[in-house]
Image (cartoon, rainbow over all chains, first blue to last red; front, side, top):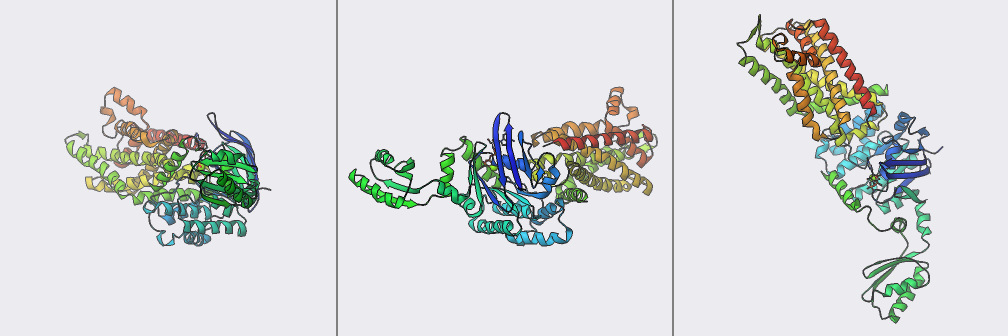
Length: 326
Length: 247
Ligand SMILES: Nc1ncnc2c1ncn2[C@@H]1O[C@H](COP(=O)(O)OP(=O)(O)OP(=O)(O)O)[C@@H](O)[C@H]1O
Ligand SMILES: [Mg+2]
């Protein structure tokens, strides 16, 4: 049995196809990353799996239970950290966690222990008795993560869990998430816009765009699938030089911005001297040259392109951040 | 078992929030008392048989204090939706019906606390309520406020944003109170006013409470009690259905 299994799962909002025939199988104890530009459909996908949205068509099972016919069973076996704020600001941090423990029927004897444990994990133990409205944006986020972990769910959904967190907290959370998957065998579906996070945490990653899964594999395989290294070159003069470089043998993918060019090439170490030689012949002055292995970010851009989504993509993200801060 | 615990949890949250909002407690106590003092004082020349106007008014004030707080607590679901907390509740492994019950009981409890406080102030204006009537009043207040909280919850499941909140408070709560015979004796009211009041379900609540507290009412107690109970039961059921439907 797969803890998460979807078959042609689709969600339409009056004509807009937010999630388009997504079929996935996620294994037990796996940390699965769902990446994609703003508006790709990640949150909508998760909302269907956690029974908050009804799919337009298709099927899905979470922990073996049908998300339409067995909603209560599904809810019992999942935990979720929402992308948008979902705390009660008029309660204290601890009270928010106690509410959650009550709603999920965490046994009374274990409650205090677990709540203390997750509070310590996110570094809020000392301030647990303050009202949440007085917390900073990052503290609220940490509390939400703590809350999602109290009841040791079988399947955990984390929708941009580390949005707005400082690097220290983020590392702590990563470690804990890994531990959960390994020791408790919890299956985790996580979305993030931080590529290094996906790379560090996820066993497998799916890249989603316009509601569809573009590619799905381990981060390692995805990076290797670009078949080459990234060579970046910055020049001082003569931009049409790039046009000539493009035609050079073995250049696979190219991106030009102003006086910089980045390209995917095989054996970049050997190719770099050739490019320099070529530049010298064309009387082009090279400012800098660098070679690196492709990152998950490169893979992401490779499959989703470089345009900002729907123009409002950036603005929406800003609004979300602002909403968190408020 | 876990459903009961869920209901308790949601109930508890309402109580904690109520308790923490001192300004709301005070204002919702002061308002009815102000009515009682100002109207009761201002109309002290009016006598209804052997009753002073203030005595007549008192049960109406008790009912009035229930209306505002009950409906407002039902409608507070809009706030939960706006601030995202509703998602946390909706995704939890308890049924919508339990959420509804928890909310309704929470709102009802806070309204009762308020109602009981006002009821206990009856001695101030020289009304003495026997322990027996006091208990029956609490039962009646429970019935009425459960119905009113349900009305609030029904409204909340139909409107999406809280822009319309003030509108609803003014267009529902105020007419509900004014047209309930809380402030004037129905038998003396002009025909048109009496007809409207008879359509208003709250009228039967006010009349029932009035009978229990001061032993006087225009509508016979068995009738007012049956109508208000039937009404509350209906809106509670409707509320449950509406709440189950909402996304
Ligand atoms: N309730 C809704 N009504 C109408 N359209 C919606 C609704 N929820 C989401 N959408 C649309 O569905 C698409 C997918 O949204 P979704 O929130 O799933 O994206 P996402 O991948 O989570 O993006 P982000 O990275 O910005 O969080 C968007 O175009 C969005 O505008
Ligand atoms: Mg999202």
